[in-house]
Image 1: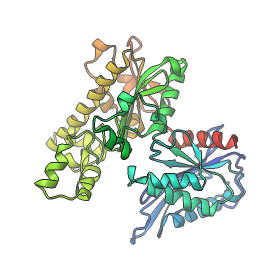
Image 2: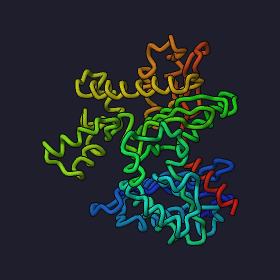
Image 3: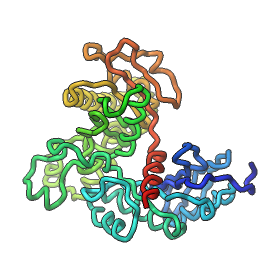
Image 4: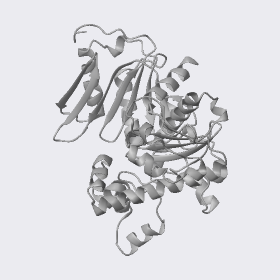
Length: 408
């Protein structure tokens, strides 16, 4: 197909938008057939030096350098690229625009069509996720201005964990203070955990309400969840996406008293500590690097800082796996997903080494296989299935968005 031919977009496709502070991921996908018509990433939005767009549609890939002063300009650029590929969003009979919104607080536990009330509530709870919800709102406003006749839908990262057991969701601080400031465990990456857990049960040939599983979403951001019969009973991220596993640039679990020490002795401000915890910690803080491929190469070369960072990462990961095995009582599957989880065979092997007594045994050949399909990497004799399930948050957002507008 040439750039001037009109692409055949089946009515009911969904445009999925994931707006970050200086980036915008997008995908145009049919939620029924799973066909992806286009996807891409706009980066360095608002930077004086200029931005970039990686775009794939109509059977071709393009990367362009372009000035992107704001998210509205980024959306306009994406719309123009799609037009060049024969895709006119205004005429595509889209079912919805599905927006990833990181924090839904206690207000949202299901996908919601965005009207003035919903938008105002997302803005009201933005202090719970100051690095995420404001850019999400910018994306919502920018796309709605360009596609005013397509219903916008918010799909919340926290929704899957909305009904965590109270003992898992509650922090042991003064109850009135917690109530006043909405302090509790919310959990994140919920769209991924939900999609992956359903795919894992499907692969095992069992209803999801019969499967107990531990899902490990390991990317630059990382989280774990314990899912009993299709319902999460615990997750590693907390009130914010900072708690839990060691991540690319985030601390994960940390003694709260460290903040007091940094403020009192180090004379650091709250903003200083925030930047330290979110941007200069995790693997990057320990080794100077948050690219997992680079870290593994450095570990193989005997680099001391990278080796320590890797050991700390594994220590925390195994800690959560062990804790969730006890919480679940019976574990049917341990599931790896996201960039590191899907691609780093060494991480999977090291995370589950020497656990044969618990019914966990990795098959080295299966683990080394590289494919984008759901696969079992444990031995046939192992009591607990260990799976690799590629996540697809965009498809899950598209499905949820299409379902909610179908009920209008």
